[in-house]
Length: 299
Image 1 (cartoon, rainbow, N blue to C red):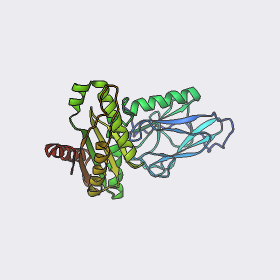
Image 2: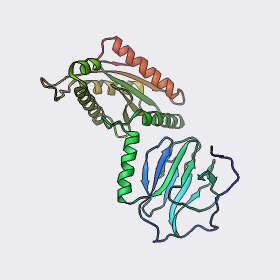
Image 3: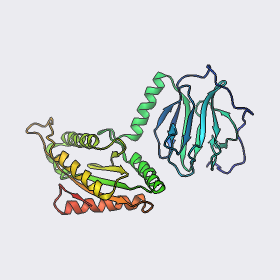
Image 4: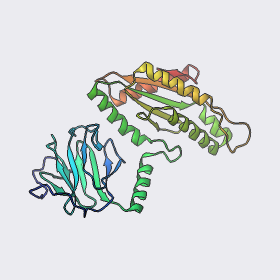
């Protein structure tokens, strides 16, 4: 376990190094743990800030991260990191940073409560491999939507953001009606086609700042930033209609398939509510929609 209160300091230079053209290309940061897990940022000879500010090149909305927490910059002989007077400090490989420190390939940078960022050098092949690793870690292999792991971490981060800024946050829980019947009567390949079609429909219908994920067999969720319950219900109805209008071609033969979804909506007021409470409220609303006959939105 990392000793966050350690008085041990990384050996460092006494002066901030000056920029140098000898810095290797394709230096990158990869978030290994925390709300932004899987994010890859290429340094590419530029200075960047790690922090909670929305303007930071690597924005980490994690408890304990300052708005401008640490700076990474090219310098003499490599890439350097320095803490920007953050409240809880910056750690490289578990050792507190007290001045400019040159990063080595594979170094782990710890900021905030749970965020770990890996510093690494990539060539073009490494970049391609890293992108595939990120996708496999965060994306559902069938639908290419975000997976439950990403949803859980992103919901926590969005809830902290909402509480901090006094904004609304809403959640839609979506379930494909009678999906077991599709699998039993048409086979799993046709079922996969249905799930992919529904996933693409949901992804095309939401805003860029919203997040849609697959969290179960036929269950999807949408995180809606700065959205009140009445707005979430309107969007839920829009999504319900778009799925109902689908005509899904498949390899099983016969006419295109038509499916419907039931949707539960819930929202938290600024400063109130936990992730579990929000998920629980959306799940109860989804259950009520199903009990009322399916192909409807509850909230």
